[in-house]
Image (cartoon, rainbow, N blue to C red; front, top):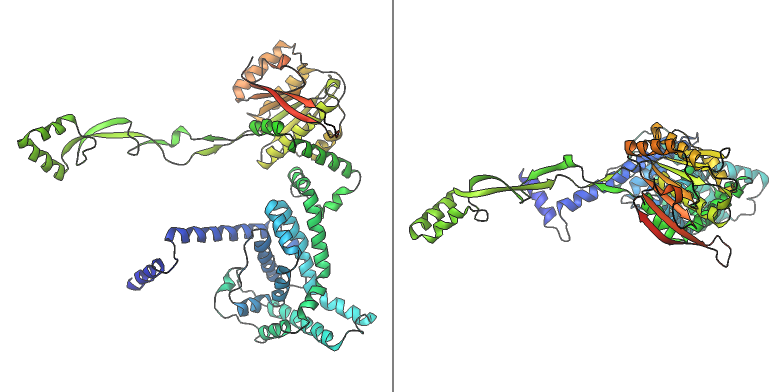
Length: 547
């Protein structure tokens, strides 16, 4: 016990030390990152790592963990015990150092910081390239010798080639029969690692050669080119990539945006990009969408308790030594010289009559109130053709991105005349992403039937996945609701499922027939810009409550 106390005291008195709670928080943060890395290896990177290779599986996993910590989690990887690191990773040590000093490496980290999905795609591309470099180098060298490509090399370069091939073979032999539980952070201790005693010396000797760095850069030139190409593609299409990752979760895009640009999909992607850009450049439209999809703080009543931290309620009269909550009759003793001594004696013994005050106190921090699904009803009649349809599609796309990022279900109902009706569902039960992209290419035209649209919304509210959904109408305000039975059922369903109705009116002066069911009404105007890129949106009126 004495030694333990001395150890803790020495930590607290060390120069530049910080509190136990600071150290504990950093320790928990480190554990959290390691858990996330482990989850990543078992999840998104599982197929990449599990692909059969010459490199042992556990070595592939640890290489993936090191690179993931560097790129995806932004954790600078400090190698405190070089001998132990080389004893486990072997030839990966010079490869890792070369990667760190390469030109694409900061770009990969920057892309991963901006988008986790792009960072995972980067790992799915980079890891196979590293594995291929390590296991196929010898085979490529043998083919080069057979074809005479390496006959013109000088003796120094040939020696470096042989040395690199030697450490690769030793790495595979070293790890082939080893099943050590070697954590990516655990190697930073000072415990010795069993293995071939000359691997450490061999690798250091290889790295001390004059042409070593030039050789490694030359070997990895193809990897650099592929990663730089990936960075260029992602910088140009990062928002597009994130949107597609939301619409098509878990789908493999061959880790390249170039694959997405093939016909006929490229036409949809071009429209997707245009509508995303339209939304981003219109602050009023962003304000509306963010309000509709907001999340609210909800401190539930069950988490409110009476506590001495609150002082707004008299609970009882008790004995205490506190003079802050004295009864008036106790304070009156101070006016009498004889009772004054009695007052001080009672205070020392804790026998002063005092009020016991309590108050309401939240027993925990406020939680975020979970928001429900969304049903967007889009008017696709002829009056919406042109710039209004651009705004409608941009708003629906922005709403879909917001809902999917919050893991909330969404349904898009396109309505015009009685015969023109289409439902697109974006939920865990049904992912109609292809139809949603086709909606961006759809040209509005036809009549308008709001009775059918309201009936469809009512039917959707009754579905299990859309109980309590909010509704978003997008129209030009030229609405006429004539079916009183549908309206009555609609009002009943709104109360039953606690749904709110938002109406986005484009170019009109009011909600028209939707005014009797709308909780929030936004009236916007479209102004065509000189560049003919869809125009700008201006919020001219916002009404709360039914009119």
